[in-house]
Amino acid sequence: MKKNLTNLMILVISLMLFNGTEANCETQLTISPPPITTSSFEKGKNNQRWDISYLSMSMDEFSAIGLGFDYKARTVMSKRTAITFQLGIFALSGESDGESQSDMEMSVTTIPVSLNFEYQPIRTKYFNIILFAGGLASKGDTNVKFGGEKQSGNTVMTGFQGGIQTGFEGEKFGITPFFLSVTQSGESEYEETTVEIEEYRVNTIGFDIIHKPSGYTLSSVLDFAETLSGDDEEEEETKIVTIKFGRSF
Image 1: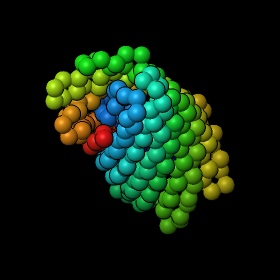
Image 2: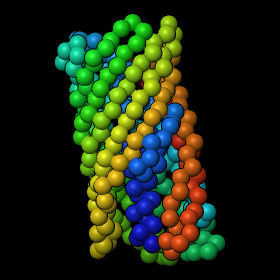
Image 3: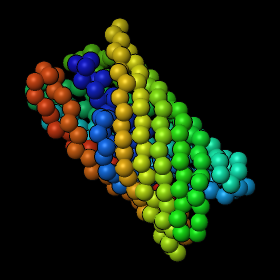
Image 4: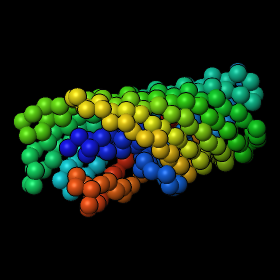
């Protein structure tokens, strides 16, 4: 039971931090908001970005929905360098169907934070490149009601991230391809049990489309993840649908 909760917690944290990618060491393609505010910056002009996300997750005997809010603020130091601070909150609630096990109810709240240093080697009217790297951390609180008993726990993750974000600028629309690599490790505590989460890396290749006059983006992600069942012998298919909506300003 506690192992399943830990696996699920890692998955939820990864969805929040990595824009809906599965936590493994493979490189995946996704359509999602870019990891930094915009693909270019100008000296003397700071900018910000917010994203709202909706998540629906279903397994063979478990389903959940979640809502998240993510805020990024960039401080431009020169025409080449900037710093971006990110803070978010994500809440998920789910329950089992109880057909082959006792009914389970679960709620999860996760707060991620990160700080990136950005370097802009190229900035033109139609094409831009930004290299970025920094640290990240998150804290998640979990409450579970299972078989009439209540349990609570928390998970703390820390790590590093880095990547490249480019921008192809049109008159009204822009395309922002990006590559993001995240390495994390942490610890989960449930009741009197502590589980070490070994270091793992997630590589993501993605892009988004931006409507420049309004600053709005709309991204939909459909992920099929696999997670181990409780007996470690069979695999269950996990279906994850994430819809994200954001705006830069």
